[in-house]
Length: 203
Ligand code: MG
Image (cartoon, rainbow, N blue to C red):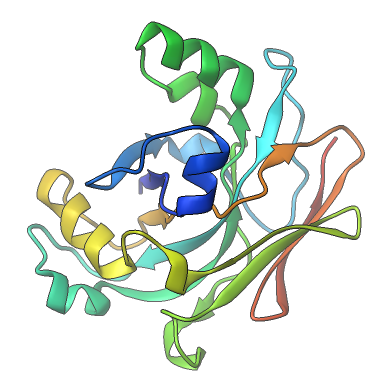
């Protein structure tokens, strides 16, 4: 399986990092070794002093597809959850300044915790869905999928032009405003429509 991720998909977040608003989805990948499941802890790595949380809706692909038409794209994901796109912001800033790729800032071990998946058909409206993150009992991020620049369907259509999507692939769909640093000992709890799906500690 592979993990695909979209950057700058919420206007307010693009602005908070002084990034231009993209005309097409900004796509990057994380390797399978980035995945953390079952509320296992995130181990703060020694190569960064500025690990940021980015809470995101994560789609699970349910069938193989390439050149998927946007109007059929909803058939290609049947489950979703919340995840954290952990980012070594110091390494990312350095890479951006030099015009270099982001992989070590975005795809390192443990950089992709995912919550418990729920079925899309059990959600009232995935295109008008609240999600958010509590950091040590304080609400630090909250988003609504209605504010996405590129919809789930647009993302799937776009990505599948370049990468064949396979069953079990995950897509991180971008973070809303409010990203910030985490520290050892922090407790992170993420939810969709008020339902806790991810709950873990930084060690
Ligand atoms: Mg992100």
